Image 1 (cartoon, rainbow over the protein chains, first blue to last red):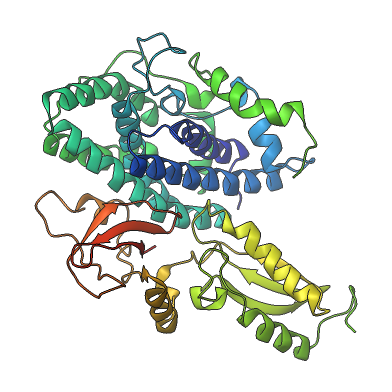
Image 2 (image 1 turned 30 degrees about the horizontal axis):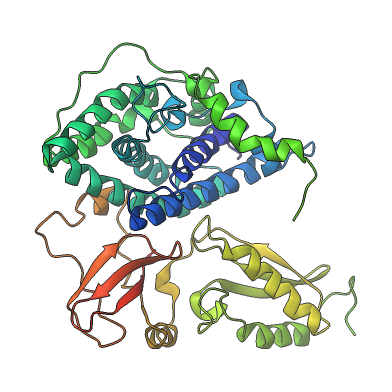
Length: 260
Length: 178
């Protein structure tokens, strides 16, 4: 049994786009150890994306490769959560000019990793054997990502007045984007129906528990949700994804057959 | 002489095992791929030998080098083969032999503890070392002291964390359980 290609692309795009975002800290980390940590995190995410793209490309056929899927698709083809493509700077700042905010990075990684420990754990039982194998590996990695981001979340939230304010502001801005986790999409529904995917709504309680426990320890207040539910996984993105792709894809598109 | 199309003999397989047994990890040249559990199998395929390897971390950049090293070594000895990457069962540091752990220690890398990831989902992350709780003890590979502290969860390669010893003051790598 094979997972729907769009479902594999959804999982792969999440990992690739967040991996690309976190890699922006490479050489710019607030301290050397965090520079290395975020680069390691990116390496894991991009590695997961590669395995998923390779699997999707094989199912798709017609000359598709991991590289055509990563570098030669456009914004509406990408199926990542909007959360993954947001910049590191506060969302109301001028996007190209604002300073990166480490609190935004940490809160996003925390919210995403908290979800993916549950998702990869469940996907180990996918009827798509290759996806199950990828899930088993990814689970080991995302545990370290959760540990890292949760640790910082608590330190910042339960730290100084300034760090607390930054962590709370990041949480207020990013938490509403997680509503997309629980909204349905055609490829997730198809994957659930053929036994290769999982019921996302069933994970919500566990996710809430992980998040609320950490927020309590971090003395942060969970903002009320509601309002706009993002639609990135259906290909309708924020204005930010185009800039991510422009930077990520330009080299491959300028030299499409290049090898080194 | 083995040719491209011939089915490898049992002797070819045995020879390949002997050759590959000495192949070391490109990042940690004191341990072999077999000791690390990366080299899983060597078997006779339809059109040559098949060397089965399993990736460590998903994004480990050494995997490409390992594949090249395997191919290069076989080719240099007149054996034809291809590398098959197998994901399941997922690689774990628990496959590392005791001999390999001793070699790591002698090289200055604290070997991994037994993998604690048997639980499912977030189960064992949520109980991560809360402040004030006692984290797991990693002994210094230089002086053996248990008085060490973690500098960073992530180190020079995907598989290692940064530690320092508070007794001999030396920094060192810890091979993380995976």
